[in-house]
Image 1 (cartoon, rainbow, N blue to C red):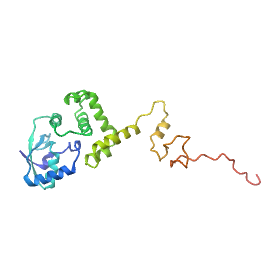
Image 2 (image 1 turned 135 degrees about the vertical axis):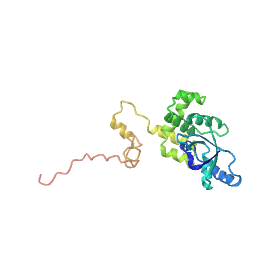
Image 3 (image 1 turned 120 degrees about the horizontal axis):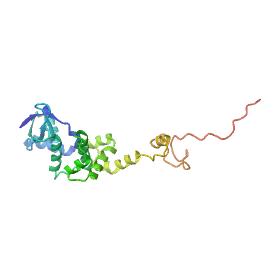
Image 4 (image 1 turned 90 degrees about the horizontal axis):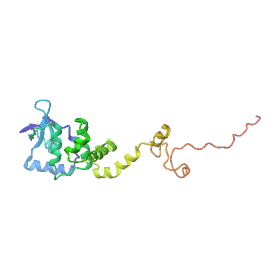
Length: 224
């Protein structure tokens, strides 16, 4: 069937990373031979509205070409079932661990699926699901948005930024006082110091550690 682009609900666009070079080639292909593979949708809650499950690159390419219609096939499944099936059918297009985490997070939050249920649907363990969800929870949203737009490779974000974020915000032991917790969460160079107390000095670092008050007695005023 053919649908008008305004009939599509693009709520799951954020689950995929963009690849500018791939999309440029897709635009050229659609301009040359037209759309060959239909997008996948499921029926929305509103009549004549459909939720796009697969085909986000094709839809963006058609928009760039000024097209109003898209060929689509409608699956008679729920949103959750369609998302899982679409992911399982992508055997030739491997998703990054972060993309897997986005999908699992969406399924867990929107459809309230438990870790064990998610693991069963993807034939994975609950531990595998938990690790993917941790990626989404630990990586700052601003970094994730750069990955979505194709401005930062997903593997680079996971290799370098996730461990950094995890170490930075790791909870301190319960015996540490609230004051120490606040000081430990302050970035180096602001009010904290990356050096030890014995090594910190104005010559060795640029932290804003207050200067040690002078021990010399103030001069006695004349006549006092």
